[in-house]
Image (cartoon, rainbow, N blue to C red; front, side, top):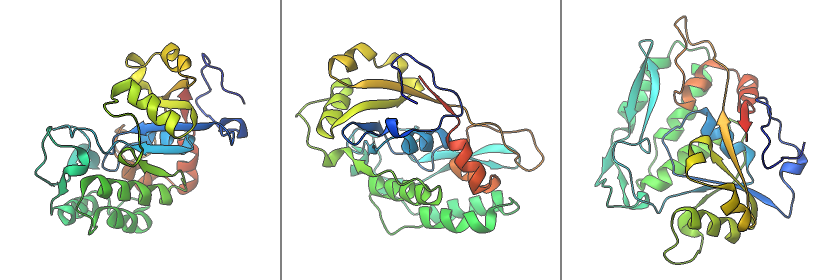
Length: 253
């Protein structure tokens, strides 16, 4: 099924061979987050290369080192401790603190009765308990471990390893990275619709699309469904086959 520039793909989207032509890569670029929610992994799964923005400024009180899990029937925030974090520092200049074991214990307490706990807990343990202290590399490790568990094999690259024009920023930096990696299509989360214009990308020879994740609710214990939690919540309650189906539940516009 070919992608049309102005079309909206069905919610249950299945990538076709036309999505990944050998001479025309599809790319996404995002900041790294701690065990992000399912649509983040939908984005990784649908592109040929996923670029992690590690050389941009850290955002205080953002989601780079935080996320939500289900604890006591309510969303509960977990936060990775950092050393020397500041909005004046790049993500790859910040160090990870020492509270990973405490976070892991919170996860264990929250999900010990979840149906998939025995299989998923070791994955989350490997993702959180690391010797890596650099924040960017730590988060890439967590993403790679989680992707492996979800059967997603998209390469994850650091933006700091890609040589682009000095001083390039914002939209121009996105375009420069696309050109550097030979990408002819760029997919951005739906929240970027106000930031990027298809005409600007088309002028640069890049097709622009926006991904809106629309996974269906799933059963979490016996309480009302709590949406937009960390991917680990999905993994704790959904079977691998169900997760594979949910990864395809999005709109691509």
